[in-house]
Length: 405
Image (tube, rainbow, N blue to C red; front, side, top):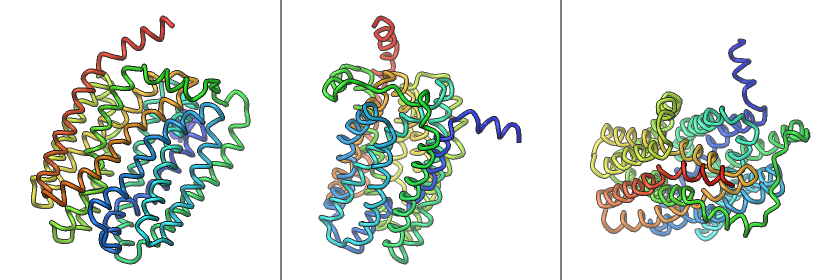
């Protein structure tokens, strides 16, 4: 009991609120968003290219919204940005259950991406604000684990609701985001009223912040590499469910199993893998992750049985474990304290890959088939290694620049 009590005390109560809230919110969204492509294809008979646009518009808005939302959180505080995003997010999922016109799905998913881009970087910045520097990697790893606990449960429930009514899953997700927002308001009112907990506010306007960030070489290399990684990784939510549904018997259930396998592997392997990865530079870890992810992508187009697809998902998952937490750590290390939200927000430009990936993937799937699609995405992900390798030497230069200034 003492160990558990001490473990809990090492993080701020709001950090724990964000971690627990992430489990329920991500679990709820995992019931709906991975199955959105199937819903649009089956119930609305949308063309694969139009489905790709519908799914891709969300990260496109996130590309712009992340930087703006992060800057606003630096300027005016984390609380108003996060609360606004959660309540709007809730309204979006309630609206999903009411509409049936394709253009409205595109608009709603655009707002969905905008809400995510405001909330995610701001919540990461707040975790960093409220956590000791030596414990931030642990906090980011716990956050990523929380994401995947929710992702392990959500798809199984989503598969069940997919056989009943997609509207139910939309309503459940909207309710969870609403409750998350209300609880976070109560916790912030209780714990963020003390002056010494408040974050340092930035006095720079958005143009000046953008000018500083665009000169950060390591951040630019990181973003470029992550755009390519996300272009490949986005296939898991866009083309993969369509491909599996058309190519495998009981494809919806196979897809649910693969998503759950992905999440369970992250939960089990995240902490031990992170412990090993700490011995290397973050960018070097991301290079290894990109290679594993590329092998997984190739496996999706090559294998024809359930076991082979599970092996491919295992390789992709290992790459994901290595890449994404290291990405957050790099951003935290290079960010100026008063611009932390803007840095985490600027990193959302990597979402351009999530926009382009589904569109390119939808085009290749409908025109050339799965093997060509996933071979192409294998090459795209491998190209990110060039940028991560170039960035592996950048931290020392950035550190010298920071010390001299």
